[in-house]
Image (tube, rainbow, N blue to C red; front, side, top):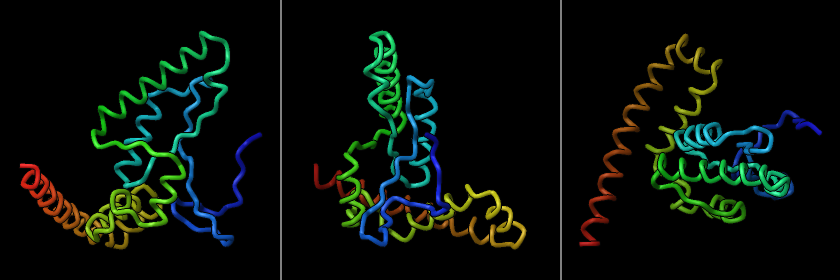
Length: 172
């Protein structure tokens, strides 16, 4: 009854040897088991910061138990959704199938293909691995990564500003 890994790392968008597209539910939200909206919201913020989608893992038992327990679970879900919408104004919701199709097609509304955005996310993701982060700083590559990150941030800000200006001009 416990999760067991075969050691292989699965990432959203990976394709298996059999041709299946992977989508990985990676945030467990089971209010009946004591999971809180704050915990799931923090995980959602972190995935957003890393340029990753949040796929919630939750089961119907949270909402089909005793009426008062189900109400508590629904209230916790409401708190999560309200908090996520407030914290991440551009947040979008889609089904797992829609996400898999968007990843497969490289949909630009879901997958940011700009080199600057990819470098920014790569450096952020690499920095979450403590061994890699330590090795980068010991070897001096941390300075290169920090410089690349700064340049990528600046380029992202410039291109995002151009997109906002173009949208305002077309709307006005």
